[in-house]
Image (cartoon, one colour):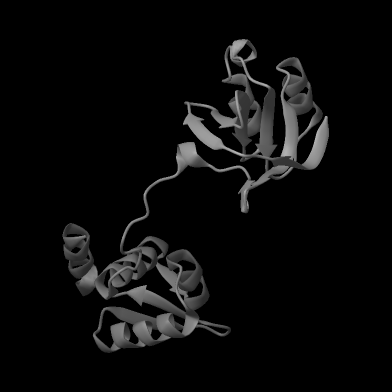
Length: 193
C-alpha cells in the first residue's frame, strides 16, 4: 500500500534508535517501527533486506518512509514484511508538530570545518591537471578543478607571469602548458599538501 502522507495525533512521544530502523513510542503503549529508505532503488532494496526478524518485533505499525521512486520489488518486499510505504509522516499533539522524512543517517559524515582550498592547493590542482594533460584550455581547467572562470583566468595569468606556465595559442583557443623548469615546483607542492 503506497500513500503520500500519514498524520497521527499524539499526547506523548519517545524514540529508540536501532541499527537499521527506529521505534517511535507514542501515547500509552503504542509503537511504530520506522525505516528510512533513501538512495537508488538498489540501495532501498538492500536496506529492506537487511531488516532481519523485524516481523517478530511487537509494534502497532511498520512503516518505511521513502524518497524518490520505488519499484514493484520494493513494494513486494515491504508487503512480505508487513511494512507500509509512505513519503512523509506528521505527528501532531499538544501544540507540537513533528514531521518525519527519510534521513541518510547511516552514511552521514561529519562536515569538515574548512571546505575551502588554499591558493596553493588550488595552484597545485591546476598544475597537476595541466601536467597530466600536456596542453589544456581554460574551460577544461575550470571544470576539472571546480573553479570560477574569472578566478581561474586571473590565476592562470599570474602563473604565466611567474613563468610556471606557457601559453600555446591555436587557431580557435588558447592552451596552457606547464614549463619544464617548473615541474620541480609542482613536485614540491605535492609534498606540502
